[in-house]
Amino acid sequence: MIVARGVTKVYRIGPTEIRAVDGLDLSIEAGEFLSIVGPSGSGKTTLLHLLGLLDAPTSGSVSVEGRETLGLSPRELTRLRREKIGFVFQEFNLLPVLNARENVELPLRYLKVPGPERHRRAMEALEMVGLSDRANNRPAQLSGGEQQRVAIARALVTNPTLVLADEPTGELDTQNTCRVIELMRNLNRETGQTFAIVTHDPMVAGYTRRVITLRDGKIASDSMGAEAELACDPEAPTI
Image 1 (cartoon, rainbow, N blue to C red):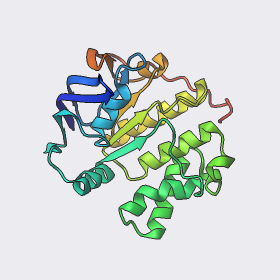
Image 2 (cartoon, rainbow, N blue to C red):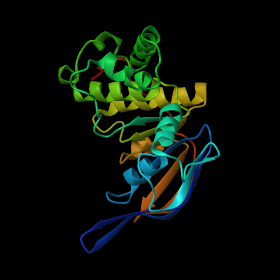
Image 3 (cartoon, rainbow, N blue to C red):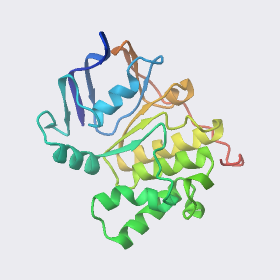
């Protein structure tokens, strides 16, 4: 699915060199459901941006479905991202002037999907995250948890083969965290979509089949295990 070989990302602040990702090798197979954990500053978000082709490595290479991305033009990289990868950003990145449905439709606009089809798919995605009744509300009219779920719907609306999520449950309480992970896990099982989730929450990591731990820009451990059973309370309020 996606392979990183010898990937390094170096930032320079004056005379200081920061190696956010340091010579990392990683392979993610199609259909995996994994988490990336580690202390603050360990390189989790930087790695996610490299895997998602949002940033270019200082050295090394990333390939997606066997296609080497080194040397691709900006237009080719953008097309590959739009067609293959869905993102859930930590800051949501919703446009305040658009309502929830219009925000979810955005990736489909870039792919030139016709209007009626965009509308249908956006509403289906909002239904999946339990927000079809909030489709006409703008971000300022939504709670933090609702904004996060709109961001998740936007990531899923193109039916990407790979979903990269940066702290997708950071604004959610325990029950809504459970519901979001349940949604992602069900999609993973039913559609074969690959999920890589950056999280600081041990509970979220415990729900994934593979846990990659980063430290100082390197992989400190890469372990497989049984997924914890989800125990979402259907009577708990949704935020």
